[in-house]
Image 1: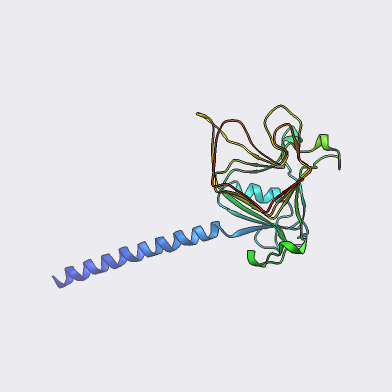
Image 2: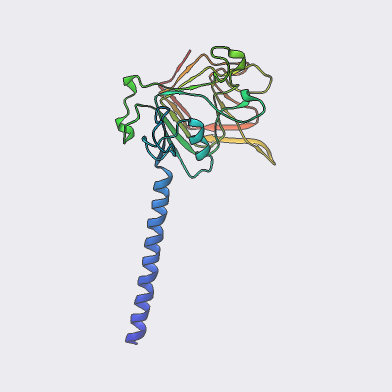
Length: 231
């Protein structure tokens, strides 16, 4: 009986150890998901793999592509101007497209180690621009600067500018909230959307110049625009 009890105790201890290790690994993986990747147009001497400010991606598009796997949730972007880049047949159809839960923050100088160190009053402006063609010629600008079809999204600390939508399909020049195509139609539930500390400047559209939710069954809840300006 003593040996049987000892074996039972050992089995239980092993099971508990496996459970604790599984919980730890789960927390570790979740923690990695919420570690930021970095973008800095001036980080020309690093590895440019997004792993730190020193090795930041040079183009925001690279970070957006990395986040499209849904394995990355947070993007930090240093001051500078970033334009969407895409290989589509119609260059104007390109945009920064967010398909997964994402928190994207701008306004960094490029040395901060925590979000609390960012000083938006210091004037380090992070600009997302649709001016992808001839500078200051609107008719060859991107139709939308950013497209969001993720249920959860935070954008904080950006200037969104020079999107120019002059076509019949429904888009905003600035940020388009777009339901994805599904076998059941275009159904979209957007919750916990926050756009904060952002400036929308010189965006044009036949629909909504700054922000527009496209056609389809779109449900928007718990959505906030905080400390944003529109000109």
